[in-house]
Length: 245
Image (cartoon, rainbow, N blue to C red; front, side):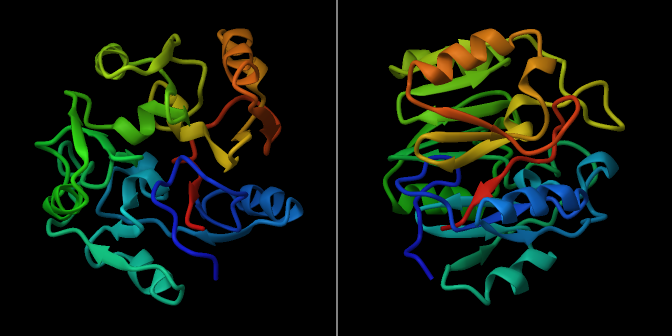
């Protein structure tokens, strides 16, 4: 097994193993064709129905560790791999903020998330690695944010965009909507994509189904990021694509 990575969103080499939603077998099939192995989630009925399968609701990668929902199925599955696994102190609940314990992004000495709603285990991990916590009101940070590289991101959330810009990042602010999430009015940009390699961003669906597709494509292309589409049809919020190693 490859050495651990520090972030689920920024890779320093091509991904070999990823966590994806078990709700969409075609995701696993598409990644398999690209030579990427997958761990699939199961539905966690302690979470709200539409997002019970979503990786970004069940796990956070921080400091080379996978922090997973306490007493969830991912703990046993990931323990088989050479990746340290910790469990959240809190138990998930089907209503906000009890559903966003793991909804945090960590990269290169930074952690982006709502400090109050993030689980204590994640906050302790951030403190241990002396990461700078970028505190925002949005509890669904991992859902709402795409880390393109260490200095660039995409989001529709005004508060997240303002926070990242304040900390020296280039941010593409897009419109909300144009991303399917059955059971909700729409999904989020972070939930419909993920990096497969330092220079590859994969989308669950056709990027041109989003009104800002040209802006997104240009933002990625100018940073040397290639676009791969794993599914046909409109963009679909599948809870992100979480790289393990």
